[in-house]
Length: 132
Image (tube, rainbow, N blue to C red; front, side):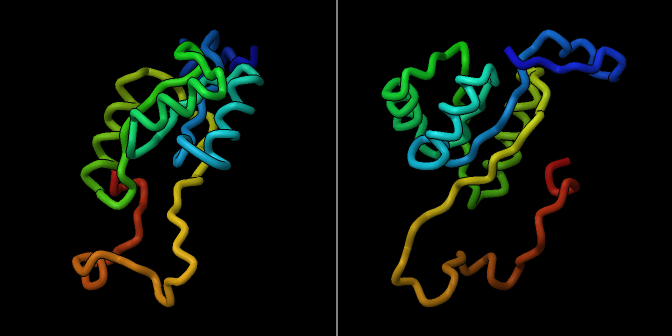
């Protein structure tokens, strides 16, 4: 099992917990196989997905146990959903050791980026302050 090595860090209470990762888009494809690979190496993976039922079926299909993973809902197109996800993750008390940003939609015929109308006029970069 992979664990935190430093016992002198302020988060030393997490010293016995396995390393934790958030994987977005973990219900299929690269995200699912990243989740499987990390859990096989002793990590705890938070599967960040829009469709929790689909994520649960995907985890079961790869024999990823509930002890090795958690499911948290997120819609990356909604700041409210992202804030809710962050609050839910913080409430777990787990450290965040890695973030695998994998979520995407495949639209090969799209000529320009598709953004909601509200985002086109009010776009701003997402920073850590966005979540606080």
